[in-house]
Image 1: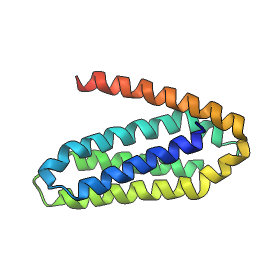
Image 2: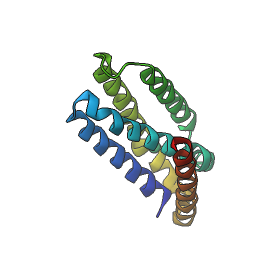
Image 3: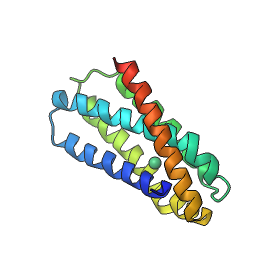
Image 4: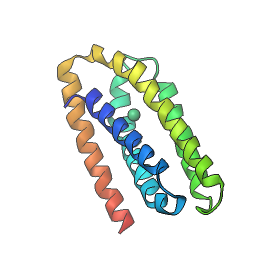
Length: 146
Ligand SMILES: [Fe+2]
């Protein structure tokens, strides 16, 4: 799979999880939110490790994208310090969702288009590398959670 398709697929999955989360009560949503955060963490790290270094050669938007991911991590850390029962939970979810949507927009309407210049073979190669990286990160996450 091309790295651009893999990234778009990740984005779609996270957006669907947010929609599901909005239909739940805060208490039930806590576990799903943890899954969303884990998913975002793997996605962001795999992009930083595999995709961004390669895409930097064809896109000038990578610094902004990296700053966006740093902002997302800060928001998640601040959110995790909150009590789930408190009213800020809904606001926190909205804030994180907003940051994620701007990340998605920045990539899908910018960086992923720039990345087309790398050509099909390179996009396929990066797709395989990013998938491998995601699997390795997910395994580490599983160990951490156990
Ligand atoms: Fe992304």
